[in-house]
Length: 192
Image (cartoon, rainbow, N blue to C red):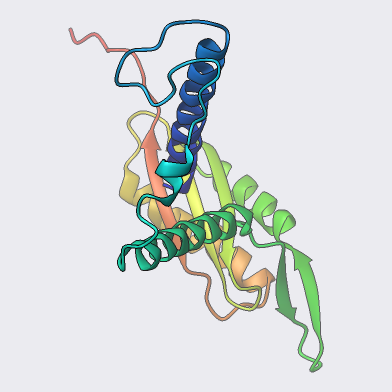
């Protein structure tokens, strides 16, 4: 979802800047603008003194400007934090039993879990991403199933084999998982 919002916002911002900049450039190069356009000619400024000071004496003007700018700043900060936030877990804290702990690279656990899930019968490909906190990781698993595989059986084998092995090897009390199953497309079969 964030990827879609990110692309839409960047596309809209780019389109608006391109249209405004291109129109100012075109008028500056001598193209005749329509009568309703904000920029009239080469010697015209975008905001005249009268336009800039038109609403200054109104009581609602400055609170409205400040509120709109505050909302824009908050949305920009939210967007920046959402883009910079790490999606994947970098490391998992493994309890070694001696009061200390060891750190296991998240990518290593993802790779092993994906390899074991991909080796299950009826699974063509598996992808795994770890999220959450390093002491309580969560797994997001995507399985592409071969044709004619029972999804319930594939899910049961994934939870009882691959996820259990990963949880036990990392010394975790639980390893919650969100599993998405997709079937591989295949051609129609002939029935005789």
